[in-house]
Length: 627
Ligand code: ADP
Image (cartoon, rainbow, N blue to C red; front, side, top):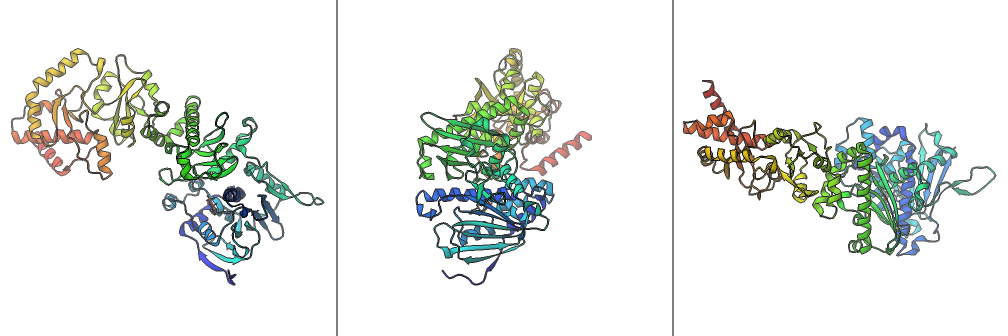
């Protein structure tokens, strides 16, 4: 390949420009992290080389001892980080250092506020990476060659982090990447061996390959290793400090913040593996993105095999970060093989149990922390009961809901708490699903429950509809929707009340039939209920039919569903119902009947099919009352 005479100038992708600009301004107070990020990239590059070399050991060339070297030059005001990892080809340089390939990047930038304190947290979740070197450098040079390419296929990339970079081909006999930072004027503090060493031990002690620097004393020549350079997870738990666990987390997760909790375990016996798993403090920016990456990394006997091995952890724990290191898998394992592998299946179930155990402990011992966890990841965890029966019991114990016994909108109440305060004779766990907390809390369906002092869980996450269709019982108590089927309060409703309800249905049969014939295309049945105390009417769905709220969700998502007709239940004691019963004018009766139905629909958060006609009818009735 001919070596180009002139460097080519290319522009950064818009998102890169935004990121650069933001990073320099918002992370200025934490500038030393640039070194952690560059070391982390070099370490990943070494992992990738080791992995590719498993099937092609020529890639090691004559340089098999992988390491990272840090140099600095006080006169030139440069810091240089050199690795002999996988390196990059020209295309890779353009792709990795000129664009951001993460999915959801564009949406991420749209969430930025311009307030640097808030944005620096967001940036942290996004992962700062290579570009963080521009916090300290006014110019950055990257000289690299991909392992396996010829020495003339080296690449030099230079940028001042503004809007362009130049790229040229050059001769580079050595494989791997060298990053030269030309420091800004006020960054002299980093041109100091002691300072650099302390940053390395602070952030990168856990990196498995040696990070070397020149020996400190003048008379001794040669280099020495600055970090511990052993895989953190192979060390004894009691010898690992909280800081070391935290820094390792930042390395594997590309998160900026400390994790919320971790669990480190070694399994020995028939199957041998270690796992070190973390729960982050914040949701990653792409939690709801199906292609979300950076989950759990797989190692086999200390050799990195792959990122984001989704088979190691169920998708409802996709927020978990960390590593699994197996002693039993072959080194040449591929993603396809992972899908049908008994070893992986047991590791996955082991890891799932570890995380569920960690969360259970947190819920018991640190309820406030658990409340934070639930706020952020509760919705994801709920997916677990939809995916299968396997962990239903453990999950049900971890779930938290808002409730009529709790003023807060937050989901604080566990099923265990609910069961412990059930009324005597109460056989079911009652819940209402609605679009918002206010709609749920004020639902007419709850009136009788308030009267009897029975607690009802207020479920307002869309996923709750699916959760309650899978989670049918807890500790032998069925979960029952208050807006579905006939009201059956079991022993709480005494026989006297049941008889009265039956009697009322007979007494009011003329009225219910009259309303039914008016609303025949809207309702399946009209009946008198004891569930209401202050509202005149409400809608319920028949036992076998789809729930009302589920129907709203599906409609809102654009699905056309046949939609079973609801049952209109009326409160025979309500003055409005009594008034309607006495209405002799047939046209006016019809208006009343429609209004009753529309009101019931509105109070459960539904949408009127013809709002203008509702307003019109209501106004004309108000006018007749005013007359
Ligand atoms: P991230 O590490 O989160 O993917 P970065 O911005 O830090 O993001 O790096 C972007 C990409 O550039 C990396 O994923 C990697 O492919 C490449 N890269 C960065 N540094 C190196 C290096 N020292 N050796 C090889 N590739 C590198």
